[in-house]
Image (cartoon, rainbow, N blue to C red; front, side, top):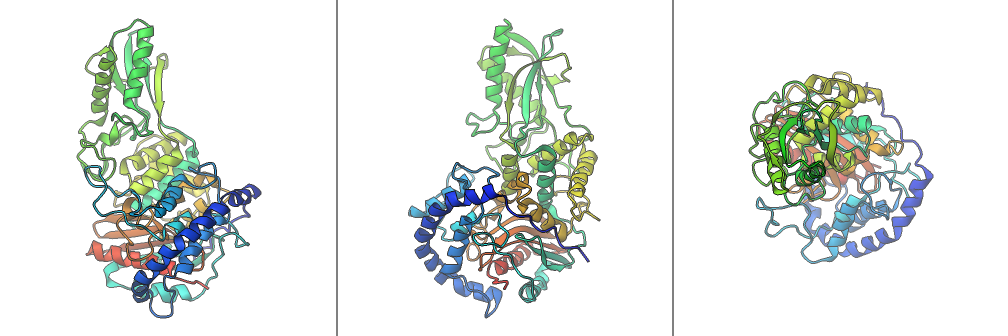
Amino acid sequence: MVPELRPWRSARPHLVRAAGAVRPRLARLARAAEPRIARFARATGPRLVRITRPKTWQYTAGAATAGLALAAGVVTAAGPWDSTGQRTAERDRAVAREHTGGADHGRTSGTGGTTAGTPRPAPSAGAVLAGLGGTGTAGGVKAAPGGEALADLLGPLLDDPALGTDRAASVVDLATGKRLYGVGGDEPLTPASTTKIATAVAALTALGPDHRLTTRTALEGDTGELVLVGGGDPTLTARADAKGLASLRTLAEKTAAALKKRDLRKVTLSYDTTLWAGDEMHPIGVNENLARVTALMADEGRKDDSTSGPADREADPAAHAARAFAGFLKQHGITASAPGPSKATGRADTLAAVSSPPLSALVERMLTNSDNDLAEALARHTAVASGRRADFDGASAAMEDRLKRLGLPVRGAELNDGSGLDRTDLVGADLLTALLAEAADPQRPQLRSVLTGLPVAGFTGTLAGRYTDGAAGLVRAKTGTLTGVNTLAGTVVTADGRLLGFAFMAHGTSDPASAQATLDRAATSLASCGCG
């Protein structure tokens, strides 16, 4: 039997004060949203009745509004919040509901424009604001009692033949850490991209949410060689609009200015990728889902202007980034030789540096977009921070060790990469929900971006086009898909205002679309559950 997860400890007083600061605004949003929620209820109620069977909750305006009002409970101060204590991106989604036609919730066309006809006004957006915290007390997230209701609700869905030959499930109450439901939760199965939840927790534990990835230039005093030193930041960008990311152009400008102060206009350029070790090629080989795993790349080695999803990649991302850097130097009056690989010595002087957004933001990007390049980089940074060799084996050992130190149920788990593209990865459903409960623990605010980064049903990332007729805005979850494997793990706000963590895993699936739809129905059924 798998032991129950560690209960939450009491929320700290300052979290309660933060809730008071946002309560008036959230109340106004709830009142403004209620008419649209009511219309949405009438449109979607019949569908949910079919999903959850008679006498279970129908999607009503009151329940959806309760999801919004839940945000007026205890709100953690950790993560990318604005001065009111409210997460900026989520505030924008809620405010956008006041404008006809909605706003861009991350759904864009392949050319960078908004997809025709989307996004639509989303009456359930308010539930995205559900506060993480509370102990079942007044104003906080309610504790969900256990019972046979979940077994009755989920059992028929998980028996669906669309879920293949093997399936596992785990549901926990995130207000207490109590395990409410489980089937095969202790059996390790291939997790696919839900592996990224483990990667996120390990990296945040090892490095902290404020850690930044730094790319720099160094000048060898004895030889005059200029070295572009990779800092393991796959989000480093060569594009004119850096959009808050570390800019290769800015690094070139700063470096050129420093060289001119030394009266240098011509340099021998090299690049250093030695932060990472071992084979750069992922076990799946050349693949449009990720570039070679190297400590130096720009825009993830993408050959097009995409920022997420599959794309053709540069054969040698490091050399390509170095050539682009040489071109930017030339724009600032510095002539550089054709770059080649090298290693900066300890005697080299750092001339300039640029840094990524904080790790909390990188984790959100990784989870929302299912960013494989970023996942592999964070796995290796975990190895470096743990004093291990920064290759696939070292990263695997470091991540597993970090999770073990947290007291999580890692028995039988194998994390052979950070992205989940490796089919030899093994993770149990109980471990996935334990990771979510750990991230929800008010005593671990450094892990909060694990939850805030989960794709929002019907709004963001890999769930933007899903749940359009069900629990949009109520489910936040990481998806996972490989041939014959479909997984889903995340959080859900229930009809009676409870916050649950869940993990559903299916193996041996033959129809990925049907398997995905069944998992979505299972998550939607949790949103519809009164659980009482």
